[in-house]
Image (cartoon, rainbow, N blue to C red; front, side, top):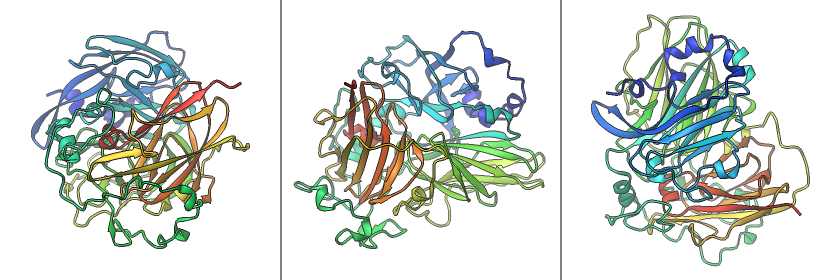
Length: 514
């Protein structure tokens, strides 16, 4: 048993308390790069050994950087297959972004590649950009601390979420897709045949031939013909069932563990916690439920938002939440749970003071959690602390999100990767991308190399959060504004791994300014 991976992450362990109080002599650190390795490891999943991948840094899975510390990393591939790592939430030079052959090839077994760029503070993560590998847990936290983090009198805890199957990713994808797979098979997974999944086929709800967004006119959803009041909490849309979950996974993990043996984080009575939650799942949206420990949402995707009080916040794949929690001045244990949307399964960790009784939490709840943000009400409540500066929009681009469960093909503007037409812009332009989802599944849409601000929800202008991954529920539209960066090919894709594996990706092609 690999004790390091078994115990989870440095930032979520007892060692983190000691680290948080060490003098920060490393701020003027020597130029030696950090060693990071993509390697296999063994987890205990409910008493059964599981061989998975991981990203091991000096303190275990993941990396924690100090304020001002550059991202200087030597990545070694200790796997038997080629891999490439994307630094999700960071904006490296395009050559270091980590997408197969765009422009760098996969890192061969035993090869080492060096990275060096300015790190952006916040709660981020890193993962393989080969979908079948991300499904094998080739992912880890990437935390870049700010000067405020160092000065604050609070304990930092990371909750890293994943879904897990004992089957190979190829088997999982074959079961999900029923043998239907579009996309670039060189860049992504190969699929075998399998029986179609049970469930209501939503064929025809995808990229409908001849459907022109102009017919909708950017109207709010409740004004679109036939769309008023379509959304229900239980995943129902006007009598049509949303497809919430493609697959029933064998386990749901928080810091590599299930609730049968959860990560128990030692905390102080009356202490303040900065809980950094990362949804690294392949295909699962979670609700983060802090229960009796009331929380404030203070950041999304590594960017500060005006604090939002509550004890349940939703989190789609690829996204991050930072929660501040003030614990009661008493001995106790506070479960922080991640509830699978539209289902009863859950995972999580437990914050416990010394001497507290830690009771077992069942991995199956008594009631199903609702679907997440079908009306975008959570997104609409988020307000960026540091908004993009106001300036005229130079270019608007529509991205129609389509697809269906049978055949299992997911598209952007009616095309899969390899048949796509790039979304274009010039470096320095203010660009608005409009994600319009005409399918019956939600899509967490991630843009590489840029930070964007949510500026429109179902046709209504908002001054929303800064993000790099935005969730677009079925039959909804989200507008995001950004300033086009380095002239290069940047990926835009759905962060639902089976959707990505079947081709739901295009490129944001930025050309040099004239």
